[in-house]
Image (cartoon, rainbow, N blue to C red; front, side, top):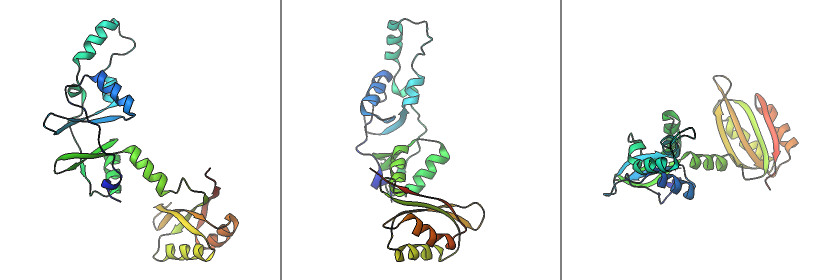
Length: 217
């Protein structure tokens, strides 16, 4: 899966000279938490988040009058609080590379550029939606976590056993195991009873970490 398949588009942008209160109101209206900032030539010059805008607003403890606050806010523009240190990606970036970059850099979004033109944005919300899909969270079935030896052929044996039971694997994911040479496997299966699945898989793995039936209404 590539970023271009799951990025949000079209992207709502704001100009550098927009007052921060106006940008904050627009952010709440559109139910987003950040805006790319684009100048009059269509060039992206920054990224402003809800946190940036809120941090620039007066606190409740201020002694200024409401009129003084309004005046000060009208003078503060997006350009003064936006982040100018941009990290961007392209549409053909694998989604896992985008997620790794966001985690390593501790950022909540990545603007997506095509020939230096802003064409989309991938956010932490985008990644959460992908995780839900990847884990089969919207489908009913038997969810199982097992600790298995990380050896060639093990996944094939497990999938074959599930197939022979008449089960259909609707999600599958691998994670680091408890020690070197092991993997934590999570899969969700439909069309097979929990007890039958447990009895079949248990002798094939080191241990069953969790097994449960999930029913999505």
